[in-house]
Image: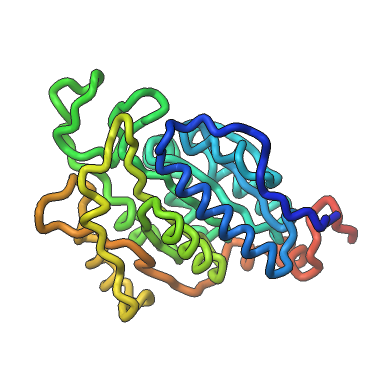
Length: 283
């Protein structure tokens, strides 16, 4: 049963470090949600899930139904929610540690199957909650107690990975309230798997190394339906730090309209048509 309750705040006190960029992401997401509720949507139209890590705490600070799940397993949890009630707008929150390591298979197949959910990856390029170990996207030369000689391998480029995985909505923004709110607005207009990566330096273990000064807002003339142009844009920054001339493109790289996972199953299509969950469905 839907209510008229529009309170998206909780009484839980945030335990992120003072000044953490996660506060920017939280504020942007809440601002987006508030706008959706003003348009007539109900809190019961949404569901969230998060995993284990600093980003996972967002679950405690947003007053929506959902689940706090295992590290790197946000996407199968979100898929379960979507199959249980395909009318829900499901938002999953993961970190670069879990998403690009043990969760990478889930990520690739969610994009490939075009599940109609939104994944936000908080990317600070370290395992911040466990005090700064390198992840799959940490730059070469990064040193911590587990890698005293520095990271040897080049970082993964998640934007190129998603494009090559046939993801139907690919975006990257910086952890700025306005950028975050705007990318959620654009993602909400799209049916299919929405991949949103948010660059958010960790002020303790991976501080902003000039990233904010190197941002390049993607030109509005960029053809978001051109795969080759999106791939070229994705190649402009390889996640291996920044130098004097480098730029980090932020915005929407690619969009493609194609059938979702839900469109391919008559049972889910029927639930969507009747605006029912399995619990409410009667033959």
